[in-house]
Length: 135
Image (spheres, rainbow, N blue to C red):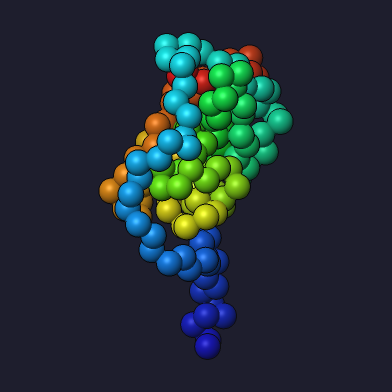
């Protein structure tokens, strides 16, 4: 007990999810038709550190934009497992956890940390306070 008092441990992810099927083939996840474009998604000051936000694009595609200690990242907003919006999950450092079944992704690369899967990640540039995502 003394050790816990001296070294408090704050867990980012305290949920336990049952492992679901690895069938990631779904028709629920829309693909962007905007390849090769730069999209302005908003002002940097509107994205607080430690927050993620969904950005709806006119073609039905959604981006997830993350502010990790002043560094901005963007990914597809849908988990490849069952299509749940990642922005409804929990962001802890550079890891987003899907709120539906607990799959975790590195927001910098899109790499899944829990199974062999990946989401698309996009280059983010902040210019004159504007966040721009290259998709």
